[in-house]
Length: 392
Image (cartoon, rainbow, N blue to C red):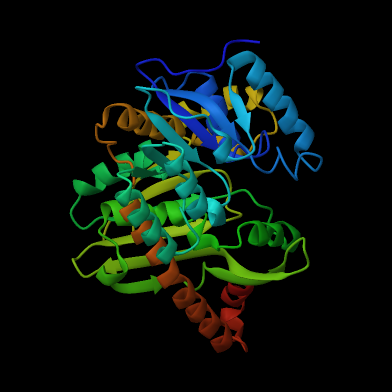
């Protein structure tokens, strides 16, 4: 076995809280990137995994996690713990960074625990907390402890987002649409499992990245929203049973346009069954396409192929967003190490704004779609096709 992992003077000591199942958990992918040396300013030294080192050890994924744990400890000297309280004290001169990638509902508690464990910077996966009230309380807790919170909104640093914004800035009257797709099967079983596993809802989960973009770059806050236009033909809201047998109501796809009181306008389109390519689209005033940049683009696809061969069976979105995960972690690690600004990394204020917009939009759009469904309950022959698209 190698020596216990320790950071150099040019690295932050990283505590990963919430690894999850190998090939499935976002925390696991964060770990393999750091273990592979892709984030030179970040040294992964400890992994806290309460589930697979506790009640979940003998359940699904337990054996796979145990294998990962043993290999990682033997090869890299990483120490594993079942709780944050088991972490050793911070060594003199070491800058400790917590990367929290567990269940959203646990984040408020985990934030308090990692602050008590000596973490000066916290990287918090989206959306940060289940509610705006909890996020605001977490912001206050961190501020009182002089701890900085950086959010894992990786699309803020994505190439396709940057290129679309730069193109639109040079075209008067242009309009940007951010399109997010995922690869669930378009059937009740697949979407029902998705709805239950992501019970906070699409706008607080899948599309929260886009809402963070709107808050970061288009001044979108609840107070600054002038109007919301919902594409009632594209958008769809369903009530489906999850694996537990309970019913969950959520969007399987949405498209909407927000106009702000300060004169900005931007659109978001999200489709759980839309495929594995997300993109940003720039159109002119008449809706004609002027520019499109996809993720992954041709350069990214070569990297995706390499990663698919390296980690067969892993979640596809890990690979398409691989460079962006690296960028966010490296900038946050440098921030923890030196105090320098983490450029374009979302703050907890952005997280609060994005989650506030999600909480504002969800009932508003469900009501609009419900009213549209009632209005088309007896469709005319000319509207049958649109009606069928609405209720799918």
